[in-house]
Length: 498
Image 1 (cartoon, one colour):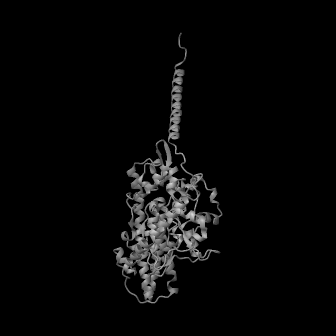
Image 2 (image 1 turned 180 degrees about the vertical axis):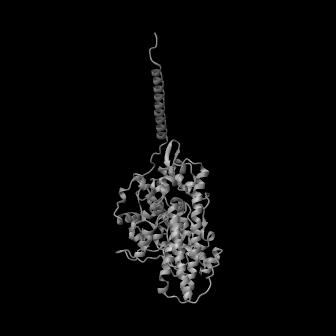
Image 3 (image 1 turned 30 degrees about the horizontal axis):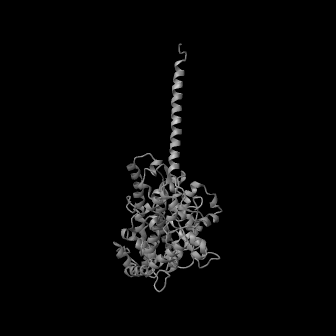
């Protein structure tokens, strides 16, 4: 019997067969993958309490996430300008000692390590001080707020106001677990959760409800609980005397908006020991700067780059090894960018190099401005004569610190960071021009000599710090109190288990 089908019909049948085989292949592959996932799916081993602070307890149910989180203990990564190893920033850049003269950062400023070290690094820092005749160190208990999942537990037990009361060391036996699961997750649903009231309150003051945030927004907002600009409000209405953690976002979360907020309330973190300028210490406005960059504009979240997805044993999960995207560009950058790794790294480093040029120059100009202001005071300048100059120094250093304190700013938003540094240079030079006129009027001729700050030790001696005594007091404090804190914590956790 003759085949009467036309050639094009045979081709159609052939193509249809290929499509059918392809679809069946996808279906079979999906079935096999789901079976594998079911086989290796982790069944809950225990019930996690609402405010359970111990990461190990969560890890029994989520071992892959737990194991990847503890990779934050690794300090071997280094890029061109940053590392996750302990780095003495004052030794690396002694100018910082002068810029922070009169403030705790001139004593001790180490680049933050991974979340695993949050408690250890806070205990060891000279900035948290050491008690002399009691267990109350100089810093408030509010300093613990971003360091541990014990914080939401303690806020629930004693109330937010009582948590913010008292000194840093008064909560030392309570806050012992490093940053972890309960900081960001609901224990029942595992959904992302805001656990720090300052972020919720900042949204409320802006007329927004954070419970309406999308899942993608939450993948950045859980980071914004801590990686932001903030201050301790000791004059909060109805809570006077409590060092209440507050985000200065009422006029917006831009650099200018937050500066206006501080200026309106005549706020300063400290008075500079050399220039007597009323200073603002920028904390680490990572979130605010990130929002001004191209990645945020395109809907990329913090977790997309710093906690990329990972597949292991048929299971897809979020890698909780919170890290620089440059450590793992294949899972972070190259999910979207198809460039070669070397080209991507060069792209990042080129931006960082250009930002650092202006950052270094602004630091030098600020050091000069502080010492030129000191010369003016020494020659008898009045507060009225110095007022405008000190405001320019304040504005110049706020911009430098805003750009420098967020470790990823030159990548997150290089255009905004460059703009902020350029403004800082302008304000600082305006301050120096005003100072030059004051010095001339006081009969001073020549240039104010640039201080000898070639090393950290020279700079600290220059501003009158006795670091050996500070270190000795800290070591004695650790010897006297840390064993007691740890023993009390173990006893409390033992009772909780029972």
